[in-house]
Length: 455
Ligand SMILES: Cc1cc2nc3c(=O)[nH]c(=O)nc-3n(C[C@H](O)[C@H](O)[C@H](O)COP(=O)(O)OP(=O)(O)OC[C@H]3O[C@@H](n4cnc5c(N)ncnc54)[C@H](O)[C@@H]3O)c2cc1C
Image (cartoon, rainbow, N blue to C red; front, side, top):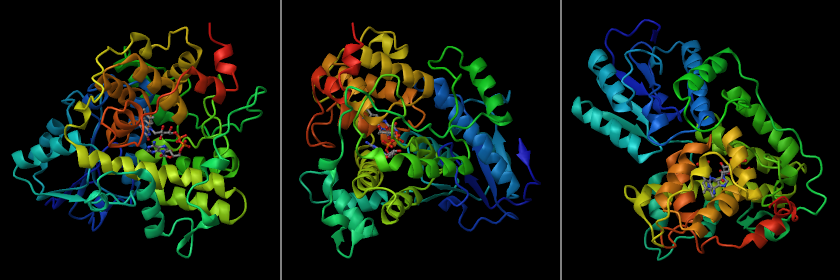
């Protein structure tokens, strides 16, 4: 499906992937509507190479279709293949080849893909067509892949903490001159409380967005085309446009950030949202830029509406962990997914795909995962991941599950978190210690509530 009249001579075909939905991306630098056009494709393989859950598929497709509208409104010629187009081959490389053969652009231009597999597919297609491929740095990240490699060079051991401090200094985030704001780098001692027996008390309602006509059409398509995939779409309410994502950011900073640090690690049954941001999917699809999220959190602290401990705890996740795992991913690929330092070989239990288990903490975390495509970090790490680790599940199967079920799941961030942080499969490369605990941890962090609900 094409919109706007195609340029007679096509100089650049700008490729936009489902997680590159930003009109100001580097791929658009120098875009000339008279000579250039944009290409996007919905391909089934992206939902089937792992058995993707319905909320994840719907989010990507809905956000892509909304972004296509933004491109059209901006007057850019767009070649867009829908999933239900009868001529769709279902494969990214094959779809690109088809378009490139028809349009014969002089050059392909894109912001570097986040995932290694996708980069290979595009490089292969470009080479097969003898087309130059102009890969540009992704400005959504503070550090380039080269910056991280330079940081890692010569170090015997990589540690997130040192990388994070260097990032704070380099980018002037939460700094007072050359000193960390508040005189310390880390406020964990003030954060991470467990809930009392009386529970979390009133939790603000999350920012949710009723599906519009475009999203409703996607939901119908996903229900029909991926009927046998896990998860449900009854509660789908994720931001699918930049405007919605900005509203979600505002709501988070105003309503949740002040309590974020304190309850960052706490758990409670039937409380999927707590004081977390729920912004990872919007960040990963590039509806939001990491810089604007970090700046909003710092501004809230400077304005006195959020304590430094919360702002720092939150910023550490984005400027620290998010950038760090991306650096590790690109340093380790290909081959990272094959690591299995503990030799774990058990198959993933089938109930991971249904949530049908007697264990209350797992039932709770898996249930909300399948319903919303969301679980917060401690549920992923210390409930679901911990169970898989203790059970000895093969890390690659754990990785494929985590990549399939979350709305924010893209490999560059999911794989290091699963394989490195959660399953300790990379021999201590990513994290200084394995995250192993007994049920006592879950009992403590949930004020006993999850264990009381267990059989
Ligand atoms: C096994 C496992 C798998 C994970 N898979 C993913 C994934 O596929 N995609 C993903 O975005 N995150 C993943 N994470 C990291 C983290 O759990 C999610 O980013 C977070 O739960 C998203 O919810 P939130 O937006 O409410 O985050 P908050 O808790 O409010 O944190 C704020 C932001 O910080 C960033 N962040 C927080 N922790 C991390 C982390 N460890 N690594 C990278 N960024 C982080 C996210 O962008 C998040 O939106 C995974 C963690 C584990 C343990």
